[in-house]
Image (cartoon, rainbow, N blue to C red; front, side, top):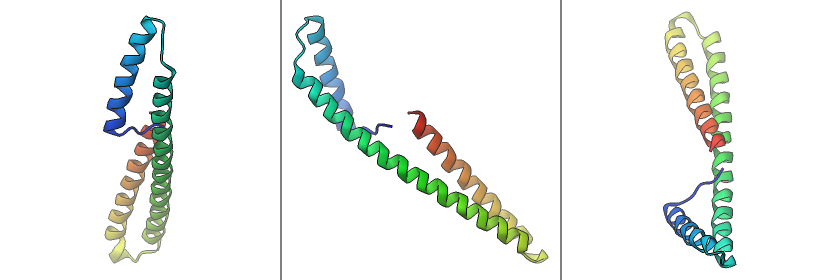
Length: 107
């Protein structure tokens, strides 16, 4: 996963266009490739950190869901509706976290 900043994205596309024009003329400057690779490495490192953070959020959401299910099962009859609502909210957080992780892994 890569996570480019706006400045990196602009710079990378500018360098890509410049390198493409030079490739048409068959005289590509190796400095352009190095700059693009440096930008890609920084974006890959940032993307790995973000993906690790998303996995942590997902694991925390799953743990919260397990806790909410246990509370719902052991709640007295009067507290069941509130416990059920808390479980449903925990399930929603798990779904959102899983979607975010899936989306990040696909890009």
